[in-house]
Length: 115
Image (cartoon, rainbow, N blue to C red; front, top):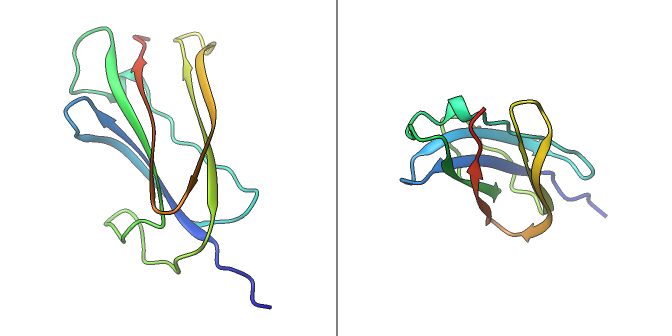
């Protein structure tokens, strides 16, 4: 029996205008592995108010991008979580146990807090 290839996972943040704010590609995401993508309030330059609406997206086996490299399309199921911290590092909100199988999944629409 041949083992299935690991999959490629892309983590993305978008602002309320649909512009990508941050992106991270994990080209060889293995079973049991974890990764994270951090975004500070200062990283959302398209919003000037104290709060910013941010959309987080997880893409499984994305098409090759300038950030990522072509990889063997694997078969995986991803469990994701989204945690919001205040300026002191304390957890303000946590969502978890979203399960995605396939190509694309929307995590959540959240408000980032001012540091």
